[in-house]
Image (tube, rainbow over all chains, first blue to last red; front, side, top):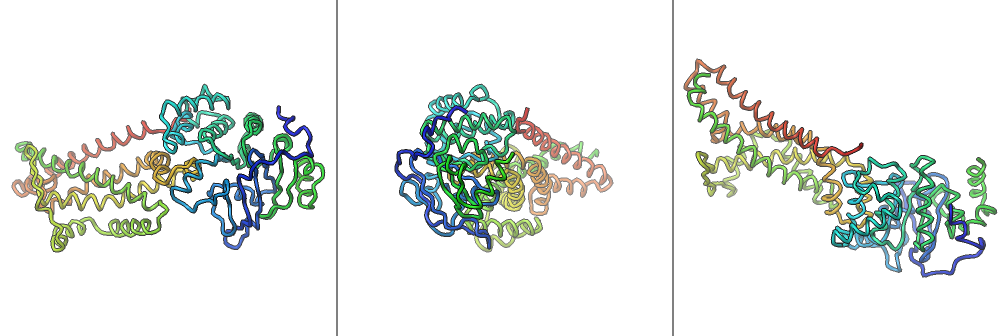
Length: 261
Length: 229
């Protein structure tokens, strides 16, 4: 990990940018299950927010509501002050502005690596193919899989696939990137190659919301840690304070369990 | 068999009508079936309902009744095919042919829809989610990501549906189209002593045609196989 110097003074907060993503009073139910409970979260321009918490705490659901892959039952979510559109063209346009990286990569199985990265720019942004190809090659270079451009997703390792997925999202020049447990499906030795790409992104000033179990990443790259339990935000703090002195019993219990080993 | 060999051009011409019925209805049924499948998996509740009702109706009705509808009932409502009068070489395509094509196409499209839908269901949900997350609208998600993969998964069931269509063209014999079975009947009428060999000759014809369809299906399957190594 090379971004240890991101927060030279761990207690200090970063110069606040404009609020980019704002969730206020968000509630969501699956039947009787109250999966998101009165979520209030504001993510500023350039901020890296890491969402952690036990499984079933609603952190993935929270992440997926931000580009409306999950709908919400109450409250509001805004991107740059504009509420998320309900559906149709406006929603598609919003999604184009929000990059998403999935736990299971979800690369398009029938398209080559290059085509995976150029699909959005050519079909959504109507970029000329040559231009999209050029940019895709740059991005694939940046995430270290340029030489695999002509292959199909199934021919790549998990770590490589996830880095391609990051390049695919970046090709749309998103305003914010959502990461939904990007390393949870990876073999241990592939996790670091994905995290390195993410740390690099964070250093370049990308606004990121990252659901993860990687505490190392949270400590080194996050500006803020959001701890969720039972569908609610239980605690929010800068990483150093959160990991050294968690305030709530739930967070203390959680950290006690995962940091023990 | 001698009867067939003596008038082999009639045999070939009859199978020619079978092939025409199959090709035209096959293409139309694939088009309509694709639209129906998109409706059934789409986000618009009304379209889903319409497609579901259509599939239930057509799939649950015996083909011969669909034929009877377009031959006897539809004209009452002004749906006629009398305008159809095309000749290609020895083939004349008239109202009977038109009604047969419409019956076969509408009937088969319900099965095409379901074969495609099984293919769509075989595409992991994450594929569509990733496409939506990129900002593709529903149409783009379907045409760029879901349907190409669904089509691949649908090739075997689609081939079965199209093979069934090829054999179902024989129902048109009852409704005035001079296709293979109709010709077989007239051979039988004139040569009652050769019934078994005449049947054999026409069975061979169908087997050959179905084999051709199977061959193309296998080729498509091979060509669109997902590269994994």
